Length: 281
Image (tube, rainbow, N blue to C red):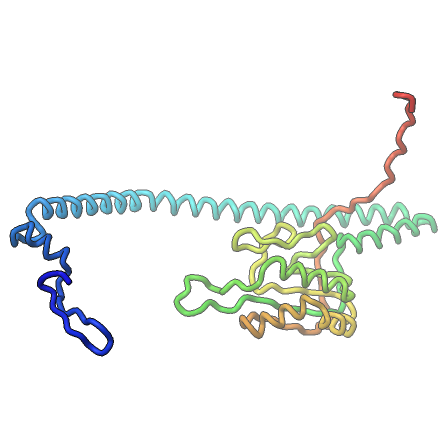
């Protein structure tokens, strides 16, 4: 046992009563009783504190200088986005006007005989399948939204709904008998996608905000009966119970869905390969 260390035997073994570690005692003896902090140490401490203060001041000044430029850049980007969206809407309206003109010219040219009317019927079926024309009819309205954010959170909502969840529900709606679907006012066509880009949800490359609202045209009884047995319906019911995600379904007697933005693409047979005798074949 080290000299100067007091102890006594207790029920559970040796209990040391010396409160000073031997290493501290040796260091104090080496200093001759002088305090641990001398003028040199205090000088370095003051210099370090001043240096940190200067660096923080420079950083604050630079942030203040950059703030107006950052704010101006954000406003400029927001203005560009608004202009692009307005331009896109205008082009969409123009495209719809041209589509109606083409439909009128086509009807006038083909409706005069049986063969022409048959072609018109085929075109109408293709346009319906491609979501190229507006449609109306009875169906379902499904509303989905993330729950409100918890107290103290900087977010407006806690994110529980992902793009793959909406994709699953879209596929289940088609398999349940949907004849036409719009999500957030955007008509879904065979080439439409539902995906996330950061915190935004894009439907056919158009941003859609919450709540996510499905409008589905089809036989109401058939849709409801088939949908409750799908994975998408079960998934959102589970989200509703676990995360308090909003998920409501209601029948609607009359829905009006806009036309989609995709152009019809027709598959054609590939040309037969030209026979060749090169290489003995």
